[in-house]
Image 1 (tube, rainbow, N blue to C red):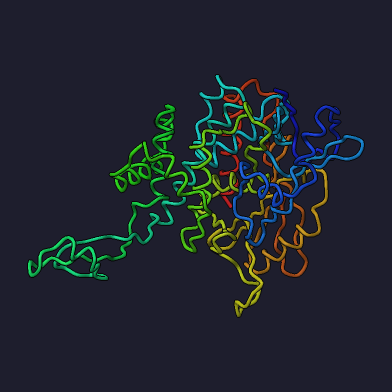
Image 2: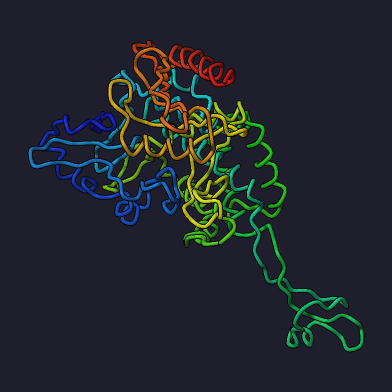
Length: 435
């Protein structure tokens, strides 16, 4: 097994050996949208490509040019193809062999405790391990949306007729004038193929010895208990038929969180994992949009300060440019309930460069609409934590700032990295708590 370590946004500086080119060209220069259609074993986050500001479907994992130079973009994660594993870490992580920053953000976003596991496992096993926690995260999201239910056909034979009479069954079953009538009806049921699939996944994870790790999260524990309560007829021998019942995409208009959960359950139950042994030329792995992951990581911190985090996937907390609320919806990354502070998450270098014109125009728009006093562009930084005032606007007088969040470098292990990150998080929380 050959491993190719990469960084995101490497500007085409990596030279690839000829022996790898044919394999890598299977996924090079293709958009995410093209890849997930051809390779369903690729998991992509965020998993919804129809939201207003998320154009990940148009992105590429990497491109390969005629001189065998490979250029990565804003996508991080692991991909397995043929007998090659590809690791794409963060350009803000200075350790070439360990993806501490990427793993740390994932541990925060998906509520994983990677500290103990990281000391004894390889990178590949960590990604197998991660899949179980991705399952738990999506299970909780789905349960928050409501327990999935669907109509099931029920057969009854009593005097309380509530549906269509089944004449053939009635004649066969009942004596005349006894009082019972055979009838059929449709009722909502929580015990359906999707819920059974989730139950099978929980039992599979239990068999692998990871259930205790999942139970460390109280919300996950409640979700697991609920699924077990509503599937009293669970039977391990039905696993194959349950998988077959869930092959088709779930297109329920309300229970949207159950579709990514279904895909993850199938991946786990098919025992493919995310590592790269026995790939049989299948392309598989898990990938994350860097900007999305950075934003979701910051949300784990800023929500402690009651910042509002608009969601363009669910259309929550949107802003309108015009007072009649007619179109032109906008979704700033974070803002205070009293609308005094706006934060725009930027997964890019901003310390030695001018702010991109689109970024500055965007933040000015948010300042004006919310009548906010201050705006911050919050970005990762390899140097020390710093706040730099860009300037005060003419006219309205709103203030634009840059906040560089220090990412530790040259740390010996993940525990040390995590401790430094926690200190820098405390500084960030203190800075915005006093605004």
